[in-house]
Length: 180
Ligand SMILES: CC(C)(COP(=O)(O)OP(=O)(O)OC[C@H]1O[C@@H](n2cnc3c(N)ncnc32)[C@H](O)[C@@H]1OP(=O)(O)O)[C@@H](O)C(=O)NCCC(=O)NCCS
Image (cartoon, rainbow, N blue to C red; front, side, top):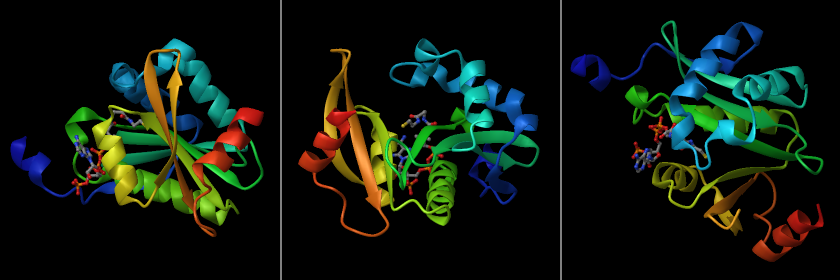
């Protein structure tokens, strides 16, 4: 078992998920739900969330499969709140499959899908104490553009990656966000 975990994941496949993956996505999100701040299921039933994303042509799930097993997932949204802005959300890798580069590959795949579909910039968020996600976003070239207190309990950080121009400044992004 230890040897298996130390070996590179040569059997890993990253691709778009579909309705056949519903149960595997649900199992994976149930496994990691309590690691999210706040837990995903607090704001929306997980079955409803998975269905909503599968049903919407402006959204999609991307999965990482090691052999037969789904080990990671992430969701993308095209034209999020404004044309050509992409959002990457709900990134999760099974605890026993972490630190093998799967999370990074999922985000890179999501970035390339968003770029191929005409997005000019991407948004991704996390909570301030999520050291793993913060380190990964920085490695992938995302720039922090806003820090916002949510529900008077935790800080949410917003990161932007632009394919064309330098990332929008904090103030212009803040104005854009607060208009909505
Ligand atoms: C965040 C998460 C998706 C990372 O997945 P992963 O497959 O382990 O990440 P990777 O192996 O691709 O790591 C890529 C880089 O991220 C950083 N990183 C990942 N995990 C880390 C950790 N525990 N501590 C510090 N840095 C970490 C490192 O810089 C790493 O590169 P390195 O291994 O070359 O040092 C995973 O920890 C997870 O599912 N966490 C729970 C849910 C969550 O926090 N989702 C993100 C919500 S926004």
